[in-house]
Length: 284
Image (cartoon, rainbow, N blue to C red):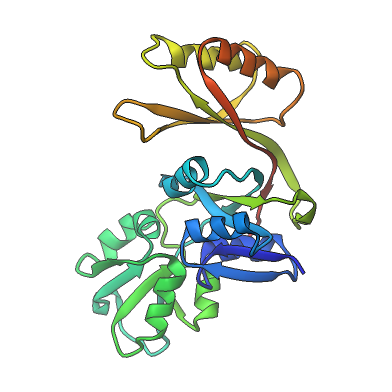
C-alpha cells in the first residue's frame, strides 16, 4: 500500500488536501514540513504533501527554502484547495463571542481572519500553534476553558468541536497550493480532474550584472511563455544575493525551455528544473 505523509496533525488543510486527492492509501502525519520532506527522501513514506503558497499570506517560505537548500525532490503535482475558516469551540461552550478569552490557530489562519477577530473578538488574546489541527486538538482537550480555535470542517469533525461561526475568513477567494513530492511518479493516482500544467524553475543571477532580471523576463516574454509567479529568495551566501523561483504555465518541452535555459546561461545565470507537473483543483 502507498504511504502518504502530510503536515499534521489530523484536521489540517494539508490533511484535507490529501483526503480529497487520494483514496485508501495509508496516511501518516508529521509535525513539521522538513520532517515530511525528509521522510520522502529517506524512503520511509512514498509521497509527501506540504503547503507551498496561500493566496492571501503568500509563499510558505520554509517549504521553498528546504526544497532548495536541503532536499532536492522534484515537484510531481500540485493540489489547489479552497480555504474556508470557521470559529471552533468545545461542545460545552454556551457563551457569546465576548466570552471567548483566547483564540488559537496557525499564524496564517489568524491573519486570514483578522477583520473578524478585530470586529467580534477584540479582547481575546491570540495564541499561535503549529497548525490549525493542533489548535483544534487543544480546544478539544480543554473543555472547561472559554477558548476557541480557527480551523476547517475536518478539524471540527476530527476533534468533535462545535462550529460557532462559519466562514470567518476575510476573503472568499482564498486558496492554498500544496505540492506533491515523490521519487516514483507512477504512484500518483489523484482523484481530481487535471486543470492545467506548470513548470517551476530555480534561477540564480550572476553577481552585479545590471539589467539581469529584465533579461530573464525577456527570455520568457518573447517566446510568449506565461509566468504565473516570480519570487526572490536569499541564497544564504551573503547580503544582496538572491535566487528566483519562476512558475511557467505550461509543461516542460524540448524546444522552448531548452532555449530559455541556453539564453539565460549565456547571461551567466544558473537554471535548475524544480518540477514540471499537473495541477489539480479541489472542489468543496
